[in-house]
Image (cartoon, rainbow, N blue to C red; front, side, top):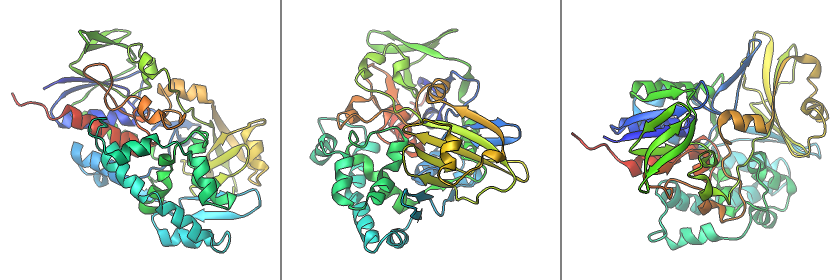
Length: 436
């Protein structure tokens, strides 16, 4: 039985800790804040509550597999439901797209409302990512990359220099379709000119498997994960910041904290590795993808009836999420902004016809810097700087013996499913504890 220390209590760190404890290891999780969850947590004020970070997830099978392999099935813990529609897109010309998920036929019909033939153009483009996803799933997300045995197709894909920006301009003639295809990555802080084609698979996943949430807030998943760690006997030390790794003879021996060293046979780093001086030199060519500006608002009285998410295309790019919890007669919205933000985000929202300024009873504003500092890293992981980024980030292996990496900074996808897949990779590499 190995002594495993997991650094970081976000979703990736909790998922790795739960899996490793289930495999029989003695697991200690270190979290610098006073609570677990990272971005998968709740902001509360004046009786209102909002998801601090993500409000939905792709690939629900990843979360289900995590719960099944670490204890009781997910369905016994939380109510994960599909979103329909996934979101509403509003464009500068006044046209609107209500985007369904989990159905090729429904998306074809929805895009045809924007113009004859656009549905076929969209579904054909989405279908072009099918083989890419299968290759990435089998040989990248579910198997540690190894230069010596990696399939030639994967090596070629990782080195492909075509940007997603160029691919979208060639494949989608209507600008609105390009905006829909790229908006997730843009909101995550990426420049599509620097994003490789392989990152476009998310629209394929959304169409095939849908987009899912939890009524009342996705933060319930973080609460359920914290309970799972307790069930599995993980030692959780909150308020304990890891300051560096202790390495002896090229092998990790402990994690240094402000209150002393925590001995370890193996360490899983599930935070931005730049925060640990031992690992920082190995990621000097990468940068984090910073979160957007965030404004949580509590509203009272009559407000527009919106779906779970509305994307308002323009500069700045605005996203309204409506799934927060509010007192009777109220509503809890989160407004995200990315781009040229020259005015208050609610003023920018009003310019799109959604003026709720007179309805605001409470408000919480969060800057990108504040969010990264609070969470110990960005939930959007590493910034795409061309195709080399895929292999210049750390994970699941690192150059330091006994140190593995999981979470947003250790994977090439953004969001819970990719952090979850990285945790599964780490657990497979560590393996089951030896019987005594």
